[in-house]
Length: 227
Ligand code: SF4
Image (tube, rainbow, N blue to C red):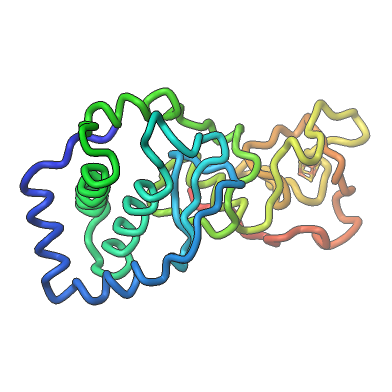
């Protein structure tokens, strides 16, 4: 649930729009081209790194009551991205000012609906995704709103790694297990192909005997995910 923007937020947003950083921010806002609702998006909404595509989680309805969500979500994400990438505003401030832009639009497209009522309607959809539940995020999602294990998982997707569910990760056998696979990295309990923490006792369909090949199927080579 996002706090209701304050009068100060509206004034600061107006100040950025009119100030020296305003034109840079507008350039970023002008990049927006389309909304994509086909992917899983932690946090319900996000934007591509290049600012052209607003991603809305595929489980979200198009409307909440009479409120059309696409323009509201697009306003929030494009303004936050413009402030972050164009105006170089810090994350917390950018999120607050983006909420102010969303609030302004709400008063136009749904007059009579308060910010609190809007947040209450959104609340049932705001379940936080666990990293293990992420299976199909946008490949070019801007990652700055995320942190911790979820950030790491999204980053690994962008490096070409695959989720455990895609390779039937399961208990291994004495002959075939992650501990004797060429892609296992014991110091970090990770794999150069599969996302997430990896147990040496498990195995997946991509098991490859250690030393058989020099990580030929490894999309990210020796690179480890960010801590
Ligand atoms: S490729 Fe599969 S078997 Fe090999 S370490 Fe990774 S998860 Fe384990």
